[in-house]
Length: 330
Image (cartoon, one colour):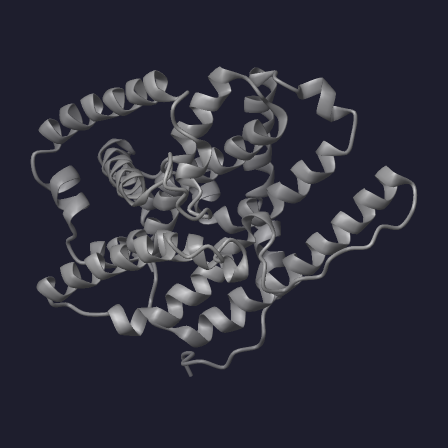
């Protein structure tokens, strides 16, 4: 099909922020970085999931044939890597806890895609009123799960429910949704001015109250603590993320930009491979060399995003699949 350059560009920006967010969360520890971290984490995954929803099709078989094997392979790879790196660090083989139902680091996204895909037939409707009802229902689920003290790990359920509204909103966006209509089609000029003010306002807000807020507000993994993290801070986090999504849709160009297009097309390889690189870097002298040097972290993030979006990696990932004989053209 025809590539959607607008969304390719958005995906490219988001995947860079994912890499950069992980670079600074691993190799930096200053109050300024904390603000940058919170700003990035306030929207990069919600927006990523929104875009995933936008491109989702009701096809559970396809997901199970592609995403499930990727999850198993990368989960195993992660155990192996942890084993090797920890053993080198301690100088003797280390016992590794093999858990398949607790996705490691970024792998929760793959589990989320599997679960959303299986839920899609339930939420798939053209009826506007039903769509609104389903979105509200997904938010209720997202709040209810926050009260469950045991969602921390199992199947990343807490996160998956927390981000479900974004997946649905993205899925419903496809046929003339709210964000595109009020961002690109109608009054694009006014939308640009409004969203510019919004962005400045949100960033100013983060700078002002960063010390009062906690990073976990934006992870979606934790249960409510009744203190800083409550059901209404979760709703606030959702509102901020949806505003960012609107800002992105309004401001990101819709034309094809050569290198950016490749990155946007191959975000999965960047997503799955960058954490492996970062993990390995953590165990090398590189760790001290780059620590708290934001300029270097930025450069390395750009390098990783460009390097890992190479088409060869994407081709390699495509080979990790359970053969699936779906409705291919005869």
